[in-house]
Amino acid sequence: MKKTVALFLSMVFLTVLAGCAPQTENQASEDFTAPLDDASFVYQAPQDATPLPGGATIALAASSGDLESGAEAMLWKGVQTFASTFGYTAQSFTYGDGGNASAEDALREAAQSGATLVVCRGEEMAKALFNIQSNYPGVHYLLFDEEPHNEDYTVYTTDASVHCVLFQEEQLGYLAGYASVTEGYTTLGFVGGDEVPDVVRYCTGFLQGAEAAAEQQGEEVSLRVWYTGELEDDSLVTSRMTEWYNNGTGLVLANGNDGIQRTLDAANQTGGRVFATEQDWNGAGERVLGSAIKCYNAAVQRQLYAFFSGNATWSQQAAGQTEKVGFTDGSVALAGSNWRFSHFSQRQYERVYDELRNSDLKVEAYADMDTLPDTPSVTLEIQN
Image (cartoon, rainbow, N blue to C red; front, side):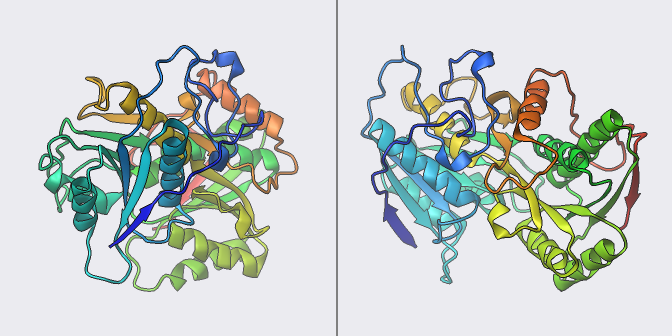
């Protein structure tokens, strides 16, 4: 178990394109700028807001001691940034460094540390939180990407001390599909793990975005889909993606770290392109066309401000509830680092994002592949 005390962070002023959400929560909608860079976001309180009291401790319970990259690293960055901005203390409690510590161990240590609020993420933390969420009076929790549930997913219970945040994956998929077809790719692929609702939402959002762009441009598009399920050998993903690329697939939207890496391996061998999900993979090389990212840094800072401005407790609307975030507050984005699009400009991205926020363009959420949107311009092939 590793415990890290946060270093003081210097505040960074946002440029017009920086940040993964509006700079202030009370800005008029016309001042909204489509997000591009989650890493630089710093929450700015409304000018007429009562100053936060500061002084309390915020803890991150994480799966890895390496908080330099990935989703938990962005959550940690957000916790540290908020703490330094508003006068709080940040600590991290991790497991997964090779010892016998578990997610529950990390959560318990964080809860026992004196932290007022514990931030965590993912499936293992959801299971652990299910077991301990009512055991530490006065401690509150912020859970991302999941809801507290038992081991076999038959019972979901969220205590009033817990607030859950889910990103709308279909919106991320839509941005990727729209950008890919606008860029000129008409033979597409999607590869994900299990055919579960959050992965399906990436795929069906990708399908809807591709359809919207294809209709506008008068194109005919094809989309191959593969849900790998549990594989004993991840190299099978590289093999099939290599086959896809060699047989005409130009670009694949890949989900999950292993799936993205294996697809990238195939793209590097064949000259294909990859669209990554959840995190910014643009730095992995020119074969990555873009990344549709969840803005963890911005999202956690906004949630922390809401919690502490509410007297360090969840509001009646948030306590024990799940919140879905996306276009409305700028919690999903196309990463602006290494912008490799030649035809899909940042100005076009801003326009499409604004149309989605205003519901001029629609994207629906689908939890399975049994009922799908009508896509006359996109031919779908499921290879399972």
